[in-house]
Length: 442
Image (cartoon, rainbow, N blue to C red; front, side):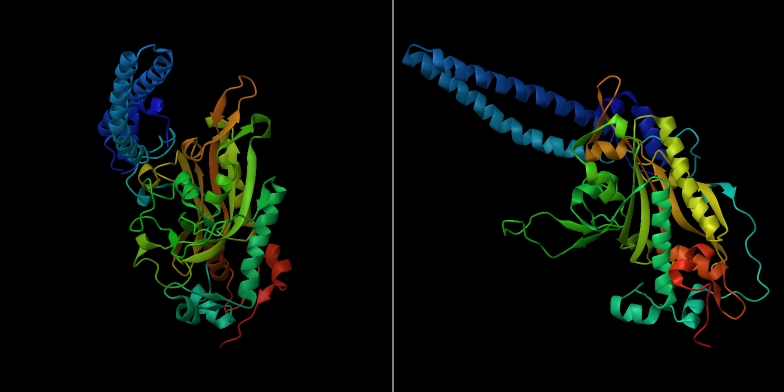
């Protein structure tokens, strides 16, 4: 969400941002609806002021005729209010719906492009591995090592279900603990946030494409069962499963005012993640590359309203993830995301992609995004400027520190040996308890 004053002053730039991001937005309709909204607010405020005047006049009248005349005028004002307030509510709803569609502007260095094919490689860690044998996929390796069971996963969970077992479970749990330790060492406060949330964290962080949840477009699971409030009444609040710790972490300070001395505030969240993948039907149907649930460590930063400083924080976050890719022995590249592959709220974004021999291509293993104040306006997170005392919205950034399934794939496929064994990266050996995972199934 952007400030309406900013929108009024920059409507051409925002219309271009929407076009470049491939979003449908009628800016003229929004400006017209805003004018209609403002006019009604003024009219309602005037009517309420007149109503207050009527109440004062009634107290001062001395004759029944004057009282009757004033009461009649009061009824007339009340009737107009009764007519205008529902009209304002309807117009406000239309205005809010249009406001939810307004994208963020993009950074000057963001590449112009129509899709992920136009993303720009800005760094490559080096040559991909060459094998003296035909490399196996993580599916084949998982079965040989008895660490991954996709068949029983599908039987129990359905399409895209899986079991991690034996050293596979230790490897993934080790990844999460290793990433968490990295975050703590870098000054990120560790948290285990809720994965069952109300709607406002998801709208606030931009995981709803519109004003409310739409099961046809939003890749979010809604929980069907109602729960109960503290007083025993049935809760009317819809609940959802998060696809990342980001919404829960960002909403932690919703409707609060922070102090500038406490910024930047660096948080790291470990969570189970749930994604319906409705927009990915028919893509990556085999193995663990695209699944409905997984674990992830996420980074979030709440920063002062300084674009240059926020960009530096984004690069710091990325650098930590890059370091982990290197320590895990994974060939990777860094991609700057183009306009057409950016979601509405992003100002600047990068992906990390690890080489995956089984697919003979790079696969996304992380994404770092700078939203400026687009999310914080929705979540109403502010801070007090230490110099001016002005209350400003914080800038919000996030980054995938380390996701479980795709890094698991990359480790198996890049560190495989001719006999099907896997060399465990040195940083994970304390968690796995060995330096090599040996085949158990020939």
